[in-house]
Length: 228
Image 1 (cartoon, rainbow, N blue to C red):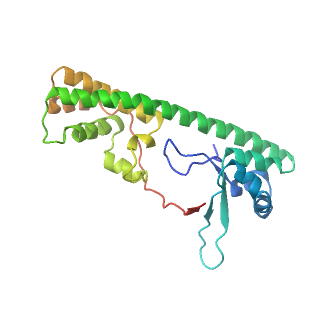
Image 2 (image 1 turned 120 degrees about the vertical axis):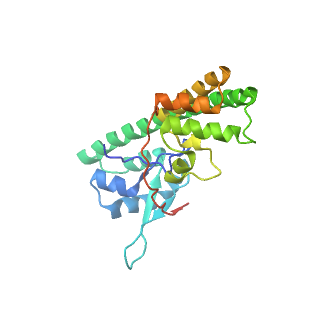
Image 3 (image 1 turned 180 degrees about the vertical axis):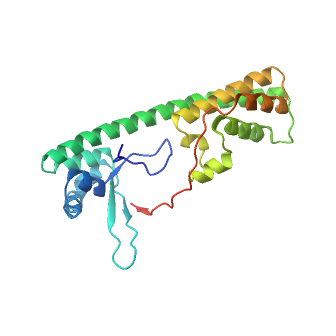
């Protein structure tokens, strides 16, 4: 599937958007015409939020071109200003579907995030009640084990690969399936702690079952500057 609705990051709080370039390409309109419409109706569009843009990276000389980012309301409004050609109608349908799918996925992730908070609280309480002493590193050690057994990667590598800021909670950047895997392993650790197992025993038990949901990591793409 061709993605015409994007997000600025993997965060569960990210706002979906499309761009003027995408609208031009899939609606069969010259980019110059779309940008002229955006500039002409900029005041109208800004009634539905800030209208940010990124500067196109040029290979060589020339003035960097603005690539406008439009949220769902802005994009919906803009396409009402376009001629109702067959290409524009097809693009409208595609845009509506993808914004709807993106919003549905974000809602699922937010629900999983809230459910996961209760599981994390239960794990912390179980670790505390177990009396296991790792010189102050009990929670971080168990959390690291959970991620490796749930997703097959360490927290540090996952944070680096997805460009997650140090100040942000990594749970805000998990897909619904990944969050489910994390919750399942945490529930298992809680149960094993209640059975009075120590850390090495728990680690061995989890490793026997294998990884729940193996993620594939890719190198982070350098972010473009987005101006508001």
